[in-house]
Amino acid sequence: MSTEQRIDEIVKGNDVVLFMKGTPLFPQCGFSSRAVAILERLGVEYASVDVLQDMEIRQGIKSYSDWPTIPQLYVKGEFVGGSDIMMEMYEAGELAQLMEEAEVKPA
Amino acid sequence: MTGPIAQEIERKLVDAFAPTHLAVINDSASHSGHLGDDGTGESHFTVEIESAAFAGVSRLQRQRLVNQALGDLPGQRVHALAIRARAPGE
Image 1 (cartoon, helix red, strand yellow):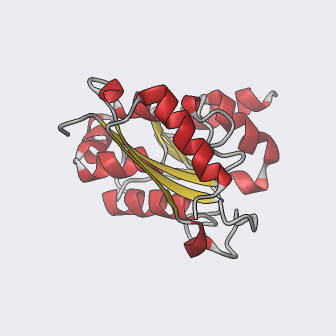
Image 2 (spheres, one colour):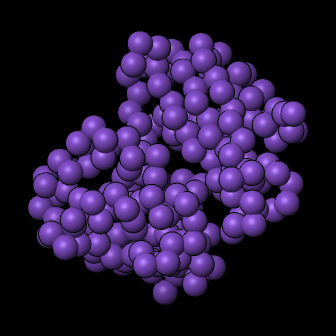
């Protein structure tokens, strides 16, 4: 299976998935840490992928979304953005609204 | 002291967006010794940019425009780049 297919399966197979550096318990980057904190605050169930454990995904995710940085959040198969966008949307109440509209399960 | 990377970020953003406000803030010192600190002192930046080019443009698209203007800097030559893009009056 190609890297793109692997990423596609992960993105489509999870309602909410965060590609990050490290794990939710041990984030390895400030931006990933911030993204995790926002999802925890929203109280939604999410999957996470540690790109530091997989060089193919680490590179592949950037072309998949045409986005040069990590973390990256996907909801219902759609790319939402990185940690700046997550923070702006969270502060505006838009991220909670998006999760509600997508009928994402609570954690 | 403004380093060469900060100057390059500034020049590219001025060329692309003719911003009405632009601040390129080097946060690298507060990440010294962390993952991504490459020892150059220019690994982590925050960009604040206000430009009429962002009026009526979505958050995602604004960041895409900034990333495109910066070419190979975000995520490659610069480990971490936070972007705050707004249109005048926001």
